[in-house]
Length: 168
Image 1 (cartoon, rainbow, N blue to C red):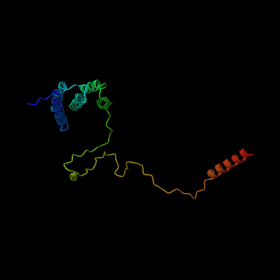
Image 2: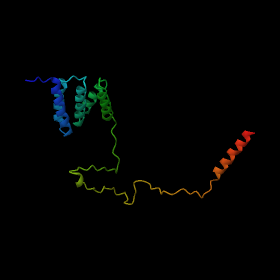
Image 3: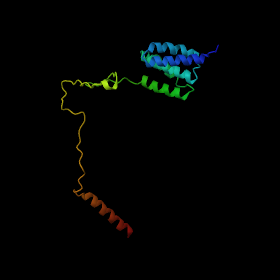
């Protein structure tokens, strides 16, 4: 019979945890990743990855303070990729909440297939005009070279005069 190491079991639990997270099964992901945590050496890449995904899972179910604490504990992890991922997540988790802008609507379609998407009209508030454009239009015109630029000729003449005086 083949001996299975704790690290191999941790790796399998980690993969299952990540798969569950990606399917939206955050509670199951947490259960699997928490089982993998004591089986792996936390100073390794696998150990760090387990903790990063565990922090993601905590945040996904609203346990953001635990996710932040976990990310802070990874700031001095021996593996550079883990430190980088934890700093990135910490920046997102501790960023101030943005307020919603009044009258701004974003539609995120749920696609069954790329061919089934149909755009829906955006609801407008009563004060909005249908004619209103989202940006200022600036007409593009070719430059008019017929207009004589007296300043340019004055500057050229002044520079030539300076050169003549300097040459004497």
